[in-house]
Image 1 (cartoon, one colour):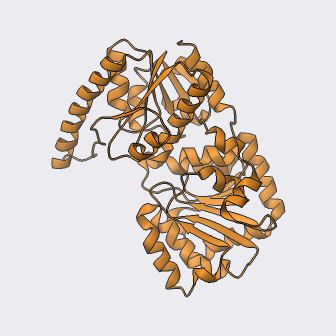
Image 2 (cartoon, rainbow, N blue to C red):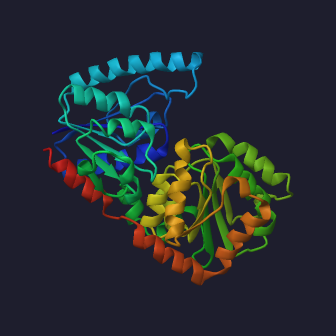
Image 3 (cartoon, one colour):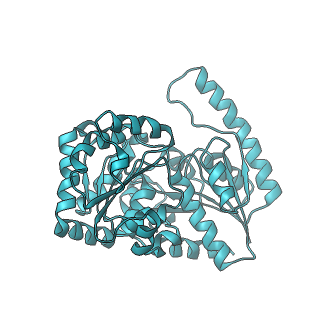
Amino acid sequence: MRILLAGGGTGGHIYPALAIAERIKYLHPAWEILYVGTEKGLENRIVPQRGVPFQTIAVEGLPRKISPALLKAMGKAGGGCLEARKIVKQFAPDLVIGTGGYVCGPVVLAARMAGIPAMIHEQNAFPGVTNKILAHFANQIMVNFQASEKYFVHKERIKVTGLPVRQEVLNTRKEEGLSYFGFSGGKTTLLVSGGSRGARSLNRAMAAAYPRLVQHSDLQILHLTGNNDYEDTLQAITTRGIDLKQYPQIIIKPYLDEMQYGLAAADFCVGRAGATFLAEITACGLPGILVPYPYAAENHQEYNARALEAQQAAIVILDGDLSSSLFSQNILDLYQNKDKREKMAENARSIGKRDALNQIIQLIEQYS
C-alpha cells in the first residue's frame, strides 16, 4: 500500500503526520510513504531528519484582503495544484491523508480528482478554512475535539479519534526526562513553551516573572523561547538583573526536537493552546497554564484552551492579561499547591486520548 501524507507550516500539523508515518512503518514495513510539504515550513527540516521520504510544492496561505499579495498567493496556489497533481500521478498513492496547513488543499484535491480516497484530520475545536473546504471532498473526517463536529456538514464521515501523539511522548519515563536535562528528581519542574515559532508576549511575561520565580530554589524551569525570540528573551531576562549562570535550575533553549523529554520531566507547564501541545499534555497528564495565541485563525486556540478549562485540566490566561503579577502568581500557585496540580493532572489524563494513533491506523487499514 502507498500512502501520501500532507501537512505543514507548524509543528502542530507536522508531528501528527509523523506519528502516523512512524506507526505505519512499524506495523507495515512494506508499505510506502511519501510526505508532501513546503520548502518554507518547519517540515522541510524535521521530516527528512526522521527518515521519511519528502517532497515539496510551492503554496502559501491566501491573505483575507484584496491586495498584490493576494494575487501572488493565488498564482502560487495554482502552481502548487499542478505540482500536487504531478506528485499524485507519479507516486500513485492508494490513500492520501491531510493533517493541516495550506499544503493539504492542493494535495487532497489532486487525490480526489484522480479518484484516490482521502482522509483529513482536524486538530482544533474550531476547524480551519482549509479543512472546512476539504471536508466536502474527503472520504473520512477525523477530529480531535467532539465540539468541532457541528461545524462540518457530512456528519456520517466524522470520527472522533483525538490527535495522534508520537510513541516516544507516550513511552518516555519521568526519570529519563529529568536525566536528559540534569534536573533533580526532588524538585518541581515547569515546562514553558510557546510552540515552534515562539511566543514573544509569553516570553516577556516569563522574563518579568523570573525575579519572583528564582527565589524558589526547588522550582526548576525548562523555557523554550522559539528560534525567533531566543536572543531577545535572554536580553529581557538580563535587563531585570537575572544572571542565569547563577541559576543552573533554569534552562533556556530556542527549540527542543526531543520534546518527549521536556514533557516527561515536567510537573506542570505554561504554553500556547495549539492542538498538538494540548494533545501531548493531556496524554501525559500534565496540568497547564494556557495562553491562547490571540491572532490564530478564527481564534481557534482559545476554543481549544477553553475545552480544557471546562474540564478543570488547565488555567486560561488571555494574552492581553499577561500582567507580571497575574502570570507569576498563577505559576507560583501551581508550584506551591501539589494537591491542585495532582487534581488537574488527573482531569487532564481523563480527557487525554492515548489511543488516538491506534484508532487512526485502524481507519487507514480499511483502505488496504
